[in-house]
Length: 94
Length: 537
Image (cartoon, rainbow over all chains, first blue to last red; front, top):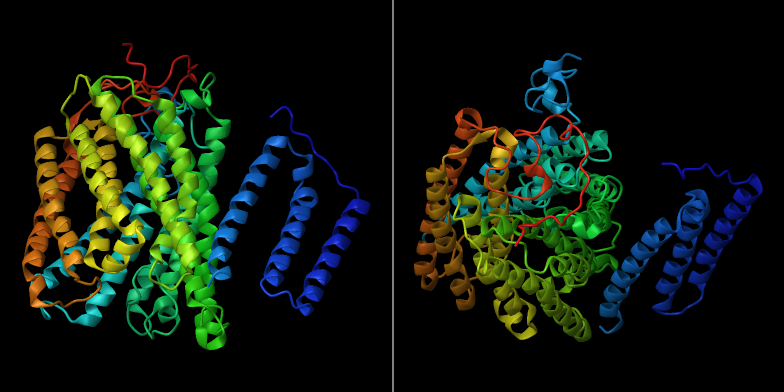
């Protein structure tokens, strides 16, 4: 297609992204030491989602693609969020 | 390239490519040949699945062990379920008719990724072979049912692993087909074919493809967790290790209920193609059908809990899933209303595809309305895990997808093979099948309400009457299937040749290309100006 362009992410950005992922991994381990009941799972899922979003945005170049793809990926995220909410709706009231 | 082998003027059946003989088929990247590869594979396995079903019904013709014992019966219903669900109805219409007709109906020469398409078929076949090994290796065939429910699936000594892993591999085939179709529909529609000028069968394939992409990974991971549970004892589903077997049911049905819509949505698309053609009338409420298709695809994601009403979910989850289940009935009813309204005051042309289409509506209505009985919390408790459920899902899955598959086969057969089948035999086969089908499954509703449980080789004498009718119905239905298949197979090889482009008077693009289509479908990609069902009234 005519609008196809190659975007090269700088090493500096790549390293920042890697560091962000490592920090978030450390946080997701550390947070398990705090007793928050069912919110421990929610926190783990939230951190994992942030990490996935970072990977999608920079490593998988979603940030540099057309807005259409971002909307599609966001729709998928919302769908899975709803699926997870409905599943945990059962567990919360058991 | 010589003119006699030009991609524009030689039929896809006659085209001589790089390979010869069987290799010309199993290594072909032509979407039409791949569609036929799926068709032949499915028809072969459907025959196996149907024979297994017939053996089960023969066992149930009288109380006690008639032709088999409990172990064989358990293995039979498991294999019957795995074949019919994972090998036949999930790939079903998209893999056969989607592959064959999607590119043609949107004015494209092939799907977006032809090699990926061929890989999908290969993964499908490899998955089947892995599943089949479960029958012959290890400690006997699996006896879990096609749902592989925990904790039994990781406790039984039966050979569950290959069956689970085979289903996992077939899942990849489904995902790849879904990706291919989404990209094809987004990027390869003919000039002028806006979203709302696209025919309804591609629309339903689009909705289905999204479900294939988004839901299938869930079952893939769930099945892998069963493997991990069996091999490593990770304890995610095992209550003895702090796991939760109900979590398995959640994860399984998060895929497997949307999978019902993978099965039925393309069927609804086929019916939406056939009804206007044989009513000689523009379809009633095109946009309503499109929107209801997408609504079914979306809402269908959130109703999985109705498979688990007696499993021990929380009360609030029960109410929520029951409410959502009733919600999904609305877009389904919109479609039925639109089909009936299309036929109203139409000039009905009573041909075999139309018989299949209207009988689809009839059996789908019975399946759909009995689904409301199962969607209600109180009545569900009464009929849960009884023959009522078996009757309901056969009316939906076999009655829906199966009838739509037969409708599609009889509708597109002359285009696919360049030959016509015998209409008399086709109508007779349909009539016998329809009578047998209802005789087989209708008594199961009553047996279920009387309390006959599913998945038992034996029953109390009180249930004998209904079972006799049901078992005889199975034999009648199989007779119908034999007539239908014999007619189609004979006609594909020796039927009257036809090059007529449009035998039924359809308006969509597949009826404007050669019969059978040339390798690249179109010499020149058409420009679309009108809607797909413009009958000019």
